[in-house]
Every structure is written in C-alpha cells, then in structure tokens.
Amino acid sequence: MIQNNNSEIYKKEPIIKMEKICKHFGHITALDNVDLNIYPNEILGVVGDNGAGKSTLIKIISGYIKADSGDMYFKGELVKIASPKEAQALGIGTVYQDLALIDCLNVASNVFLGREPVKAGIFVDRKKLNEQTMEVLKRIKIDIKQPNVIVGFLSGGQRQSIAIARAISKESNVYILDEPTAALGVKESGQVFEIIKELKAHGHTIIIISHNLEHVFNLVDRIFVLRQGKKVGARFVNETSKEEIVSMITTGTSINKKA
Image (cartoon, rainbow, N blue to C red):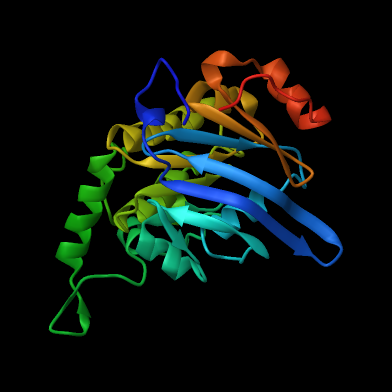
C-alpha cells in the first residue's frame, strides 16, 4: 500500500483498482497489461503523449468501451462496466473535452438535461429546476448568478464549469475530467482549478487527463504516466519534477520510487 507522509489518502484501499488491463484495436495495442490504483479523495493526473492510451483507459473506466482482458474493482468489488449508464450508477462521472453542451439551452437545462424535475407528471417544474441548479453551482462555488443564462453566451471557463456541474448533479464519487483546461486562458484555467479543489474538499476523487504539465503540477496529488499503451510508473508531485515526468513520457525511463 502506498505511503505518503503528506496524506492519509494512501493508507486507504483504492476506490478503483485496475489489474492487467489490455485493449486492442485491430493490430494496434492501445493498452498492454496496465495496472492502476486510484485512491479515495485524491486528484490523480494521467499523462502521456498522443497515442499513449490515456483516452482508452478513461473510456474503460467510464464504460464507453470494454477491455479485452484484465480486471477492474470498484470499492473492493469486481465490476464489469458495460456502459456509461452502469458507470454512473456506480458513481463514476466523466466530463469529456467536447463538453457535450447544448448552446441554445440555458444553464439549468444543460445541468439537468434529460433529468428535469416534473410536475403533474408531464410538465417541467422550472422553479424546482432552477433551485436545484443553483444548489449545485453553489456547492462547489461556481460563479454563475442566473440559471436561465443561455450557455452559448458563456465564456470557455464558464462552459467547462457547467459541464462539471452536470456531472456533479448526478452525485458521483469519482469524476474523470478530460483536458479540463484545454483552450482556456490563465484566468479561466484558475477558475476550473478552484472547482476541482472544491470537489476534493467535498471528499470526491478526481482523475485528470492533461497534456499541460504546468497545470498538472499545480493541481494533482499524484501523476500516472503511460507510454505506447504501457504503464511507465506513477509519482507523487512533491517527489518528482517536470523534467523527470517528461523523460518518462518521451523515453519510458524507469523510475526508482513507486506510487
């Protein structure tokens, strides 16, 4: 079991444990016997070059694709996640880079899309919808004042916030964020950082996939490195450097300390 003097997180059992995960697409090996432990209430950064297997890994966790072989455990129980719906039922929510927001709808309608509260059995309860939306936004300090603002008029950072709020509204335990600060400026990236930190403060586990090592080092507890579908290793942020992580990404250099 991982021991880190700066945290009690790694004295607990993993919330997600993956063993010998393999995935092939024709003759291409996307993942090759990958082992990964993800711990309760940690922020884990998953990094690697294009084609390293990052997206495949998170799609297996979130139920979009199935591994060819290997086992996955959630809270100590062996699970076979066959769809995103099954992942969500376990408490695993995913926010992809494209956000999948509907620009012509307002904030509330995007946050509870397909799950709107109703009255009289058929009519959307707008008052309750707006109240529930504002509760979600306030819970993690998302600075959007009105639930009826059209999403298409929001900034990139605000749109990312809405996508995260939608995942939060489903009451997940684990949140997977795919490139959450891609194409965002410094200020907007900072706003997303604060939301992620609020999620951690509320006891959630966050997995971040990112190419931006500066953002990774500013935000995560631990970094997991993939290269050409294989696990290179994992490092605590306070026990490594950008130079070492870059070396692991580009050359697959072995590491001396495991995490």
